[in-house]
Image 1 (spheres, one colour):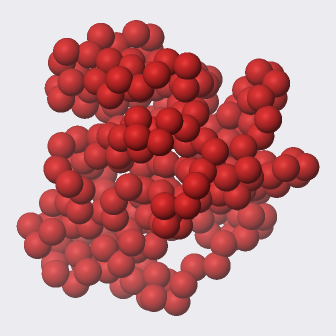
Image 2 (cartoon, one colour; image 1 turned 180 degrees about the vertical axis):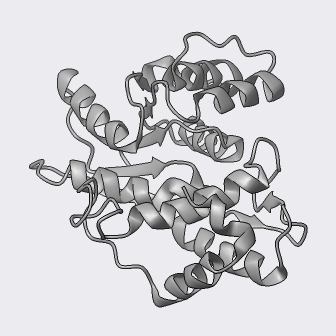
Length: 250
């Protein structure tokens, strides 16, 4: 994919906004990891759980990232025996075998196929297990989906009597380098392809919009109202005019 320096600047501006980061090392009661395939984020979440021994809820069935996750784990963690087909099961295998996380800390939610179901099934599972809802949750997702995931959990859990404080943590802020290659993590293993990065950046903005085609109250109602910052709107407008990017929005 050929991108100009101006395109890269605009894509990186939007990516920084999408990768919502609230984490200031405050104390949390649980980490919820929504299934995806970006290894540096997954590894950062597991490092945190291993050092702080907080409960780890792994949410993910079989969805858009399942094949990518399996490929990444088989390539970069060949010694890990993946038990089960769901994202939650594969991530649990990695947590136990490669990061030595106590199995007693791991809760698997293997049914979710999208971020809305991540939020709903995570809540339902904690209720089914008669576990108290955490007061403060560290929420981790593919960095480019972090803002929408935060809005989704906030929307789905909003009517609970003890709705947690949600602390978003993408682990790293993604960006394209001068060669239009995804970067920003402590290592570059199992990141997005350039094409997937661009498609996700433009697609996530579309989904976050509160209009007839977005996920806000005026659209599908999957999330609450989100106001896009003016600089994000301007960056999107410039990118939408680029013929090379017109077919990447999905």
